[in-house]
Structures are given as C-alpha cells and as structure tokens.
Length: 99
Image (tube, rainbow, N blue to C red):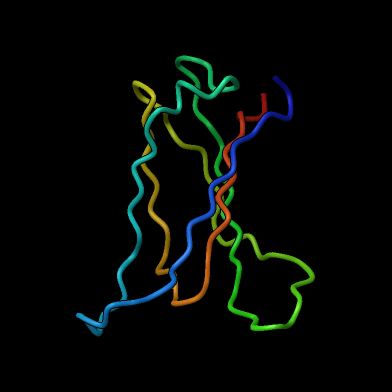
C-alpha cells in the first residue's frame, strides 16, 4: 500500500587490507516479490543514506548518497553502492515508485 517500505542496514565492521584500492559494493536483492508492496511488473525506488563513523557524537541528519528506481525482474534487483568505509554503514530504503 501507500507508504509501505522495507529497510536494510549494511555496514562494514572490519576491513581486510588485501588491496589498496577501495571497491564498490554490488548488491543483488532477491525475494523482493515476497514484499507485500512490490507489485509484479513494477519497479521499486531505492534511497541510500550514509551513516558515518561519528564515535560518541550524535548525528542530526543522514545524508542521502544515492537514489534511483530499480527494475525488478522475477523478484530480483541489482544495486551498486560506493565503498563503505570501516565502521560506517548505509541505510537502504525500498519503496514503491511514485505514480
């Protein structure tokens, strides 16, 4: 229904330093057809908000770092995020597309 969403939290706790080159994060979201607000044949909207490593300090507002509409095919969608730094996270919100 209207206003329905799903939220994922993706964080990086420890980085193995096997490469000096940071790499983007490629996500394959599956089972989207099991979400009650995802309709067959319709795309979904994704918003990514960055949660920085602020230590003990509070965060007033999360910065939106990425936003796009994703095609859903057979309950699956693909998303690429920029590098997630150690002790930081991304809050990913999936919603229906505005009509």
